[in-house]
Amino acid sequence: MVSSISQLEIVIASGKGGVGKSTLASSLAILLAKKYYLIAVDADAEAPNLHIALGIDEWDIVEPYIEGRIAYINRDKCTDCGLCADACQFGAIEVRNGKYYVNKWICEGCYTCSFVCPVKAIFFERDIVAGHIYVKEKTIYGFPLVSSEITPGRPNSGKLVTEAKNKAKKIMGSKKGLILVDAAAGIGCQVISSIAGAHAVILVAEPTPSSLNDLKRIHKLAKHFGIPSMLVINKADISEKYREKILEYARRENIDYLGDIPYDENVPRSINTMKPLLEAYPDTEASKAIRRIAEKLVKIIDNISEWRLKHLPAKIEPFIPIIIKPGNNIVK
Amino acid sequence: MFRITVTGGKGGTGKSFVAVNIALLLAKHYRTVLVDLDLEAPNDHILLGIDKLKNEEPIKLFLPFINTSKCTKCGVCAKVCDTGAILLPSGAYPIIFPRLCSGCKACYYACPYNAIIEGYHVLGYVYRTNIVIENTELTLVTGVLREGEEHVPPGVNYTRKKAEEIETDILLMDTGAGTGNQISIALKNVDLTIIVTEPTPLGIHDMSNVLKITNEMGIRTWIIINKSSIGDTSKIYEISEKYNVEKIYEIPYHRDVVSSYVERKPIVIKYKNSPITRVFNEIAQSIIGLVRSNGK
Image (cartoon, rainbow over all chains, first blue to last red; front, side, top):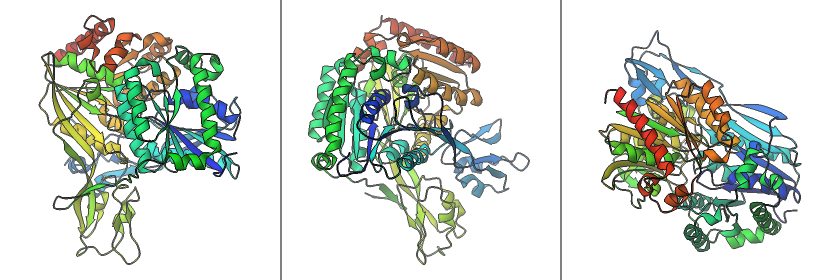
């Protein structure tokens, strides 16, 4: 397969949540797995849903993800001076009835509080089970799925996403194939970990003002990484005006438009049966649209190097941090 | 001040839709601040029809600078740094990587020689926009992450702190998707949390994860089942009982929602007689009841 890149990584992302990433990912995975050796990765560790879309309720491998620390205050030593609460940059230290406590759903375990505490009242729980990596070696559709889930309230879900992607690469070994990554909503650490190192991004949008706004933000992120993008418009018929605005943006930004998926009442129905749309309703309009999108995608994958050259971002826009030096001099 | 947080776990369940409409109804009775804490995909202003956010201020995260006249190259700063933002090449002064730095300040306090000076790194921007829609006044505080930045939790904390400085009766916070600690920051010390979900296995799965946090934090919790007509809601009622959810409201799928969304005019303004507006009025009345019993 895959002309010049032996292990291809394609990410499905959208910025806005709930526009249909997992619906598209589950059906695309089934179609692409017929042509390529494919591994699907659920990179939304804070709200992993791809396994549900694929009807998986049992795993072959469950590995704990051990990461981070949580601070605790020894009430016998604490003098309730409040220095720790002032120093914490995460707002993790709360005061209740004049007494200080660490909110374990917020604490990242960075040690800052322990350095400012004058009476050494802070201790740490270490080796926290901050999440899990799950592997289904063979879904009923034939391909493996690697999923990740962060323990609610834990930080650094991006690191867990990187681990999940590495797990998929390990399973792939030296084989040629395609890793299809279903990213989280947003543009933060999870999404950065998802798209770092990818060869292409499939952007999913719906024709609404919010989705257009978020599409621009996620696309800017892809441009920072120099990754070329494709576009799918889901629920395409809900607003012609915003569909046109999205297409206009794609044309201007050299994003390869793969096609529309119409609003289809069978989509929520299929989600409720825990079957990918393509399996639950193979002849419904949205399924037909996804098949057309998959055909286009196969052509792209088979000529990925050429495609990448043609669709590289129009302008290279590396990420540049904005820094304020001591003394308030802003440096760009 | 009465604090409410709207959250949900799954993306696209309608958190911003709920937050914006409830904020507008509450603003008729109380001074209300709506805080958009979805720094990665802030959309409350878009739903409110606002194009230009006002009063921009940078979200400043601490960034270490080395005072080379004091630094002894001991390496303590690099050792305490959890994010790998400080590198100590042998024989040289520490090198700082701003994008990796979470601004936690551990290095600043750990340095035995006081050789670290406080600079900043701009994570994004916080805006404060005063809005008037049909004689209803509302203050919107919006946190926006710069594309490419990744340390969302301290940015959420910063944005919330800015909003808390405003004198108001009601502080209504709208969070992003997910269940990480950036959500818990919006949940701490609130009087009410409203979880917006949808009756699908995906919505229910993510809602359950949020309920674990709100339940253990001991927060009064209500649920809004959005698009309630697209699936079976009975599972949500079942789970809610386990987690002491106080109230459940249903908002059916309705075309008024889509058209108000695309026209960027909140439904409680655009369709005053819509069945959806009726549900929002009922929710707002219940909140007002709570605020009153809290002594306001």
